[in-house]
Amino acid sequence: MAIPIVMPRLGDFMTEGLVAKWTKPSGEHVEQGEVLAEIESEKLNYELEATSAGILHWAVEEGATVDVDGVMAYLLEEGEAPPEAQAPASAVVAVAPTPARATPARQAADDVVPSTPGARRLAASLGVDIAQVTPTGPRGRVVDADVRAFHESQPAAAASSGASQAPTAMPGLPEPTQIVPLQGIRRAIASNMRDSLSKTAQLTYHLEVDITDAQAMRREASSNSDANINMASVLAKACAEALQRVPVLNTLLVNGKVMYYDVVNMGVAVSLDDGLIVPVIKDVQTKSIEQIATEMQELSEKAREGHLGSGDVVGGTFTISVLGVVDGFTPILNPPQSALLGVGRSVQKPVVKNGEIVIREMMTLSLTADHQVVDGSVAVSFMRRLQQMVERPSQLFS
Image (cartoon, rainbow, N blue to C red; front, side, top):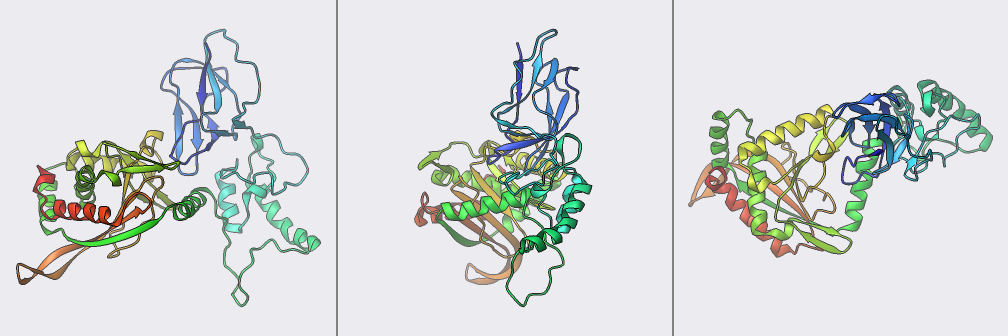
């Protein structure tokens, strides 16, 4: 029986992916676990493995954009015929280009355009919208020469139409040194941030906490462990404990319904060269600080190397974002989550403790919550509980 191979979901907001490369030819026998294809999404590059042995039969060619759960290929038994050839409703297959010039409708809503890495870099440097370029490369992909030809043709086209292809700006500004289309991961981030701010009622609460004792215990634990235990892992554990006491912050708002969770799946924002991604540590409430630190380090390394799997970036119920350079900031929610904690830098400063001025290590925490779900008094209760956990940290390390 033919086993369908479908486009995996590589993130909570992913709707489609690009079959960048088939690593096995159609008609070849493959074993379970062998890499079949390289998949590209807005945020991840992913190696798709065979779930069982069989004869690989492509349903789409390289360069095809396929909806999540759309069929890309089949695994067949020896001698088995593939299903009737038809273009899957969920797949958009790249076809050979026609001599006619591409119009803006060709890739109007696509975030991923079938193209070579060199063509994408060249398009970015020339300020060319690669979605408007007619492809002439293998399997309908845009190549460097296509980008150059499109770029060189723009002045003539603009002159004949009486319109400029350059974006309009306020008069009096100097000529820009570079014009770069907002696309790929930056376009995804921009879209998600706009949606976050337009569809939620965000309110941010700031609180300065004393982390002197937590830092001392963290250093001691780190010296006795192979893991690099940092304050982010301590705060992740403290958040998980506080969320058990104030569960309304460990919720998702989906289609007008608030979904509560007993488990805490902690998203940890990781900065990349071209954006941000949020891998998820599952069941944080059951794990020690050492286990959290180990997973946090592994996921961060995988994120920066581009090796995150589909299961690494989905399922988050709460997020923590560490900047560590500024004193405080206003983090933006990661919908449909109801809350996110921003972590600023730690700094030694004079404070009043027991009626005396002493030097303590302080840190500003910033909680952004969706006021549709979380009232101010509830958010304050969470912050107070979090402060207690951090300032009296023995329970966290037990």
